[in-house]
Image 1 (cartoon, rainbow, N blue to C red):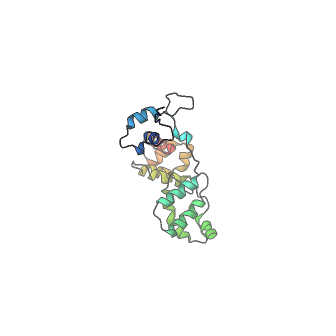
Image 2: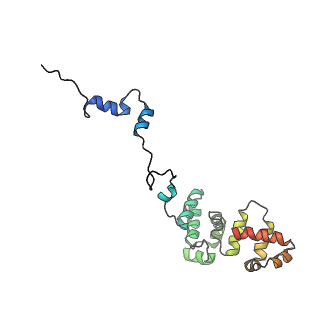
Image 3: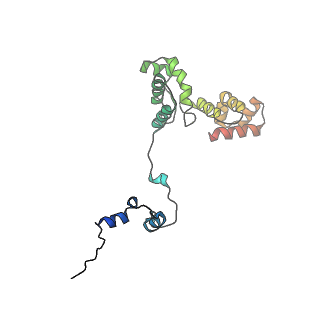
Length: 193
């Protein structure tokens, strides 16, 4: 008579136990990883170039979305969030709030003083200078974020914005009574903001 030997078929319980590491008491993970791990292939096909995942997984977030996200992290109460949301809705694509607060208050049926109280919070959001009403205010908000002594910088922005726009450094130097080199250095900081 023929002796039938038991063979492991893919459906047999023995084969399933060997294939599934959860079914085994001891499993050799190093061997499993060595035999089953295949590194991801690059777009160019196996080059050693490191993939830039920012290019693969990217979403476009609008300035308004970014500001609303920051507001959500700020720990504001419901009334403050309502007022900040109103201000954010008036931020244009350049980051400015060009509509006067009195007009916003009238259109949105809120108190102008309450909006004014929330403005500094909006101006603390990223990017620096957002929520400013003009270039001068934008530069002043950004100057406050610098970690250096900003007294002269603030004075230059508040009192000499026209000369700054014209790059009239000698007039600024003379009016502020500071050396030309210092004026140039301050202007470099302002132009980099």
